Image (tube, rainbow, N blue to C red; front, side):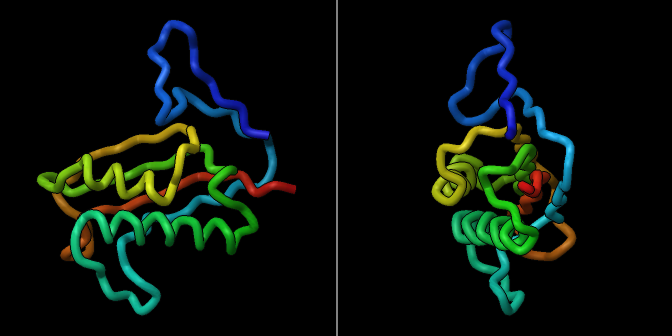
Length: 127
């Protein structure tokens, strides 16, 4: 069972937890996922790329025997200059109202030209 940590002396956020305690056991580390479809084609725009990148994270989790409810850390890297509010809304359309530890960072760019967002995750694999 994952336990969310929200100390009273820190502001409460309905979007993320300040920390997460994960039980000992199997862990899956999802490498950075881009907004590419199954053929490797890059989708157009921050919204489409973010939705696809999040779906790709979910696909890796499922293949590992885990799922979004078992994510203890989610990192979202958006290219500087994109509308972060659009990217955030797009990620929430797939992620939902799950609370976990989340970091959102802007970057100068990604290794693949045209990539506007990259998402990685750490999750427990339930027994």
